[in-house]
Length: 338
Image (cartoon, rainbow, N blue to C red; front, top):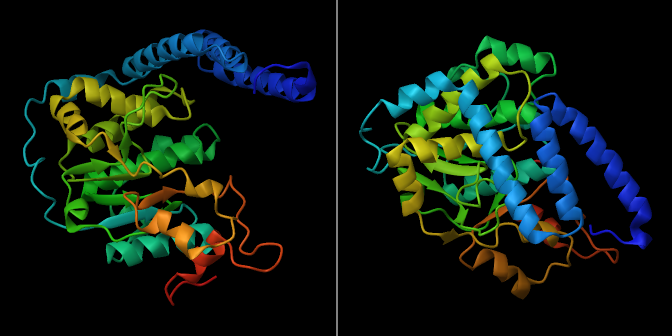
């Protein structure tokens, strides 16, 4: 945002939000709350070097916190030795997505995205929900209870479901708001491990874009998935509040540092793929132009992260012409119900 006297109204709203977030962070630890507050002020005043340094401090603190609360999982995986059957192609092609309330209750954007996944993977794509997940894996009772009590947000339950299905069945998970513009190769659908990747030099996010949680594939034997699942089971046994909204990134980082084959598999991925994946969300309501739209359907990017929270999703322009989003809806299969 940057501080300027003309932004005084925005600044007061921002400060109110920071105060509330500080109180929320204090429920985990005052030390973390202080780090996050310093980070937000450094970002406000655009102090790039301080943002990097404080981000690193935050990452170290959270990694230590998660490790302290998941000691049994870390110990067990560090002592496991070599993992077998993790570098060969996946013997089965399975594609998964998720909508907690059920696909029939999902909004139009999700149904458009899942339709695109079915068309471009040429697979049924199983949508996990609160009723059918038990066919594939179990969520511990203490997690369901804490979710019901409001201690565990739905986002963190969904994070657990992603790594649980990959650990139990393997295959490819495509998030609820991932839109496919081109066909997937069989190599991708059978990948022993794969995710979108664009290594960033920014220190702000723990992942530095080395992986994303909303699109990930692999064999069920690949230990990243079971490690993350087991960490989340143990963490929520010991804690009542997420240490960070992107807590799963910190668990992946612990796996990267603790399990050599996970580090090797992540490092072996090309440093860049699907580089424009965050671009389309800002152009959904642009007037549809066939030549310009080819940028999204004929380039090296074939996966686009959308959102039901952000981005203007008008289907027509003010003069009644189709937008990019409107065109994307028109491309859906006959089975798609608006």
